[in-house]
Image 1 (cartoon, rainbow, N blue to C red):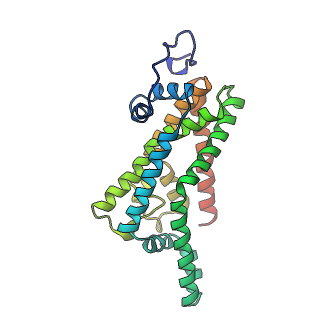
Image 2: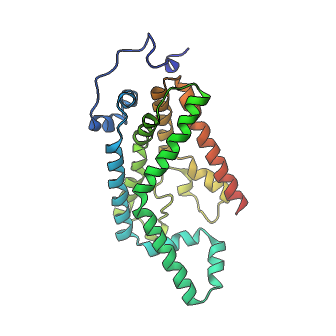
Image 3: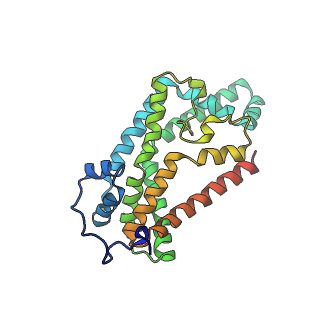
Length: 256
């Protein structure tokens, strides 16, 4: 057994670290994640990562509203869906205007409700990972431990929104802004969405540096709270990620 595969709590493990505050956990996730997740295993609270997520998402929302505008977001999304654009061209001007109004309102509403959606998505993610690590890899995690791990492991993901806001502040062309891929942390950001094959473009956007960082943190945290080998946590997390990427690529290929 390698050092990275040692079971938490084994005889060779060090004594438990002192309890960390919420602020210490948030800062520690970027430089001492193992210690953070050991603290999460003992006390699985997640309220501060959630509040930070809410703050960043609403900051992003208002940044998009002021620097891009939701009508422009709709136009940018429409350019990525030529088949939908062709269907809209067959409508009367009044029908097109009504469709646009509905689409813009839906997109705004989805982003305003994003904090609630993140609670739901995190719960689904935690439930899937809990079942995988406990029943497939023999772990002993609780739902709330895994749920807290998803929130702390997801903190680097907020950097994508902050980088996007920075780009908007320094003068990014609103017509080039893509709300579903707002920052250049993946290859897809630098490719033409209309000229690149859809399957490859989808794959290029999914292989994202910050996403990979998040997945590694998730694997570390999952193995610690479940008291399994580190490799088990990584297999559980990356296994599901590969499945989701393949589904997305296959869907893009089927509808391109």
